[in-house]
Image (cartoon, rainbow, N blue to C red; front, side, top):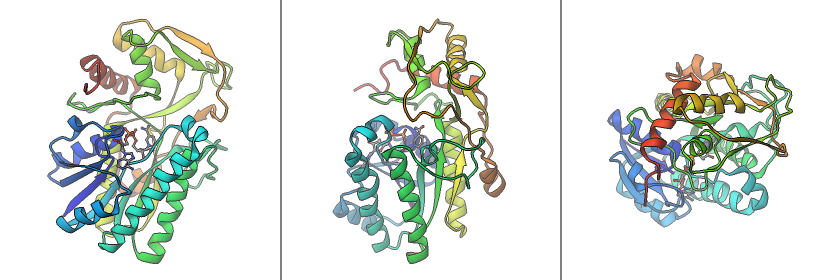
Length: 328
Ligand SMILES: NC(=O)c1ccc[n+]([C@@H]2O[C@H](COP(=O)([O-])OP(=O)(O)OC[C@H]3O[C@@H](n4cnc5c(N)ncnc54)[C@H](O)[C@@H]3O)[C@@H](O)[C@H]2O)c1
């Protein structure tokens, strides 16, 4: 049976696609290329199109024996979602609903959904467990939480079973060096620092240096993108074996401060990074660290690349080897 991977040509999706292709799965990527890169397909079948295009989806589900969908396609910039919530609700909710409707028409009833730490908002306790209250502080996080709720109702009403994986900060690149992160614009800390080390940006701004953390900068949980991909494969196996709808937090359980990440990029690259103290950004929590105990216990997930140094090294190798990302 084939797997339809929406957003499979984006950063996290392409790493999941590579892992699935490597283990012999039939993978069909559906990506509208707004942010995706055809070069990241790892030899999977690529269909350029939108998840909201129901006629296209009907053609895809008619022409292929598909049992499951891995749903990465979404917009994911927190700040932009505050400026333009409509854009986020239309893509992340309306388009997802349009796709779910066609999935039900074709009796495709398994889904792995890319949810986010942003569904939690300001943490009350860390590490954050699955039962932690979910109070997102922006439309992006709210769109992810809404789809989590929708998916629970779809299991109850239609028997569509899903696993929502709430990623913390995806980082790094596949150890093969063949695929990596190439976002325009880039919002993620590690590639931004690396670009500063490579001279592609003048500096890195640190949003707040007076947080209640040991060095005053925010602490985040970085999870290697290949470890994330592994969690998707385990989730799919569990769904195929009958697992009910659930959600898992995915981080590596260790937080690193912005300052520690900057120092690690300097160490790995051997280059200095100009860091400039800036104001705090509203809505940024001081510390965001996941507990991934539930997925470890239930699915046997274990990160292979938990150390910050390994994560940063793999990112550095990708970016320094591909200074223009995937290119034109
Ligand atoms: N990167 C992270 O740290 C992180 C953290 C938490 C959650 N997530 C979630 O993981 C998913 C993947 O994130 P990413 O960093 O790989 O983002 P990305 O932008 O690199 O990948 C998303 C892909 O989806 C495609 N896409 C978007 N809307 C589409 C549509 N309507 N139809 C078809 N294709 C569409 C884009 O072209 C892109 O290739 C997103 O859902 C994001 O919200 C990411």
